[in-house]
Image (cartoon, rainbow, N blue to C red):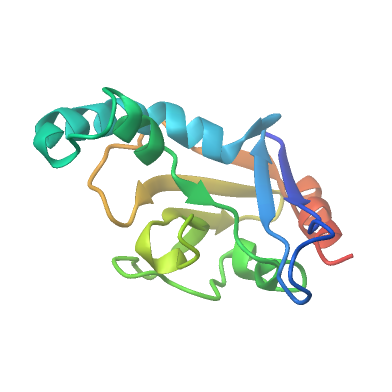
Length: 163
């Protein structure tokens, strides 16, 4: 069984008041964005090679490094008591299908533009994430998951985001 931690990153003192704090996701002790980056890097490298002429000022490899895993954590509106991470999505980005939930959004601040999606299946004792995909690229993310979490551990971590 996998473990999950939903982490609320506290705003810095210099942040604008009212700015939401992002919610990070850690699976089995590894940030989800890091797991995704590792899977996406070969696709980003292939895209960089195809589009090399589009980025003449970029050193080789820089575009791919910036593109792979280029996601941001979601804001506190997705925190408990929201049921977003319990299969009742607050938002569905463009290209998203019914039954999918956004886990990570775009670093530009508009979740819709570059999002990581999954299917969340709730059972009495477990929560399963499967069918990961990016809403903007047709990259094979089948190597990610499925992740099966203890429902009690999952919900306890999610509830902690509301404090």
